[in-house]
Amino acid sequence: MLDTTITVPEIQAPVVFQELTLDIEAVGKQYTRTFWGLRDFSLQLGTGILGLLGPNGAGKSTLMRMLATITKPTTGRITWNGTDVVRSPDGLRAVLGYLPQDFGVYPNLTPVEFLEYLAAMKGLDGKTARKRIDELLHVVNLTDARKRPLGGFSGGMKQRVGIAQALLNDPRLLIVDEPTAGLDPEERARFRNLLSDLSTERIVILSTHIVSDVEATASMIALISRGHLLRYAAPETLLHELEGQVWEWVVPHTELSSLKSQYQFSSQVRRSDGIHVRAVAESRPTMEAVNAEPNLEDVYLHAMNGTSQKNGDR
Image (cartoon, rainbow, N blue to C red; front, top):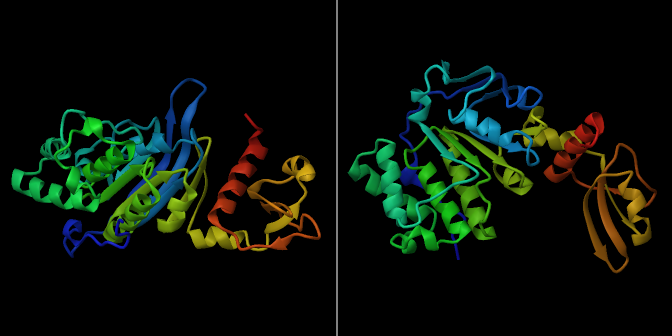
């Protein structure tokens, strides 16, 4: 059984920190003459966890790659503590931890060998690297597998190696793109707790389409669709805005299809008395509907549905 309430004092930074700021100013990324992966995107971030929520293809990974200095924006500017990261990327790269969505490993290396290789690339000396690797393998629950070749690892185990490599240099900016893909529920809880522990003196950007991961960790949330920023607010603000607009009721299965054309259901469960549905609507959908407490799943689906209606389904 994994301990989901761990703390990781060994990999936390010294007590004294400089104020951290990451400014994204009207950033856009153009891929073809007619297609922009991101357009006029602006955020100002400080210490804490930003949850980036959006469907596949929304532009989350495009933004991550630009923040990680892997690709350059077509328009706009990104600054780290006031320094333009396109003109001077080395300052950010020295304090950056990045876990991309598609993380690859060398199958013939063990976790220790792989992490030693990456530590050397990040400029860590041998003694520091060995200590850090031992700590991180414990944090991601891979100590017993430290000498096994990575080629025999499951997808979830490889993802945990990816999490470890992102933390090797004790980053001030940690970017993780779909980090819980392939993790079981206990591993996901462990990783969410780890992010919370790390975020007190760092900027952490968590990009995902798993609403529960953001709900459990994020201090701020950015909703993204079709390359545009829809909303940027604290979870409490987003939830408050939907108060009185979330409804639950029971419908016969024969009416479900027609109701789906009228409402965006955030859940539907078949039971003996009918189908229990949950939807967002400004007014009571039916006399049987009762108000329910909003959650981030409601917020997310409401925002995405509004975008589809404005732009037309594509």
